Image (cartoon, rainbow, N blue to C red; front, side):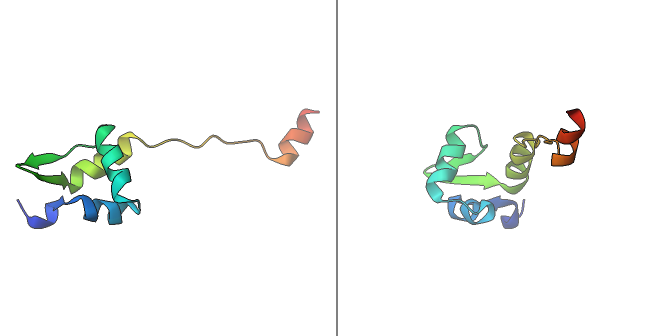
Length: 71
């Protein structure tokens, strides 16, 4: 176990470029964490995995030319 394997809320906030309150909301939505007493830690690999599991695939929209071909 290395200190670089874990992040606190502020570090996760910077890593994701979101506010600390957003990290709290993500935790409520299932972002894995470790609690030791009053301290909350996020394993870097868990954060990356959780992000991958919540990836949204963008939908391809037809281009203007493709729309014209349909008419």
